[in-house]
Image 1 (cartoon, rainbow, N blue to C red):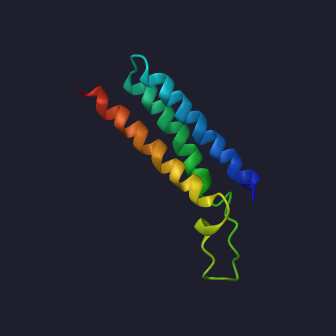
Image 2 (tube, one colour):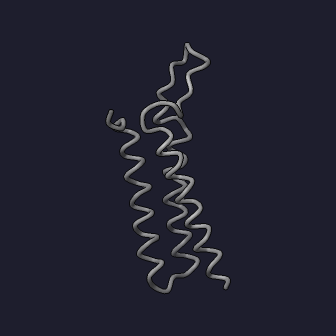
Length: 94
């Protein structure tokens, strides 16, 4: 099953941040470069958490959105992107 349209948009945003971080990693970057990517990722994360893509059945308390098509993938991608940016920021201090 394909990813929902809203999830796909969020997934694409995360992938764009990851591409930009990969590009930065191959050159000299500053804390401001990382901060800009973190801000982009924060906006994406906020959209995700604010329920823009909340497709749970409100009548079913056992409905877990992370079991829905694409939800777990987006959550995993967000975690990986946050981790990557955190590592890049840590590498600046070395």
